[in-house]
Image (cartoon, rainbow, N blue to C red; front, top):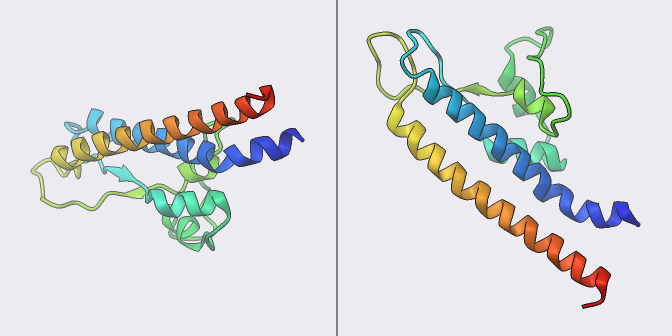
Length: 141
């Protein structure tokens, strides 16, 4: 019974975890903007969400993190639903060359940070609405 109720929330819960992971990735890029030679990281949210939901083939994500199938994936955060997503994060595309070989474009990172924050908030509100609806149904209201 509980599985049926929480199964409804699984997709949105996974989306929320992926949004939080992307926010951490972008924040890391911004924090390392002045580090010489730093390569900005990012991942495609849509591909990662399809992988988590089991809708995609997963070939793109598995191949994005490594160039050889014998490579060891990066360690993941314990207890994270996006555990295998972290090892699959790729590199951001550099738009303008910099003198210190850093690939962080602050304008792009700021825009991505705000966009992801708004989408995170939207997902959180949608998930909260679903929980309130289920709680209302349980209480008979």
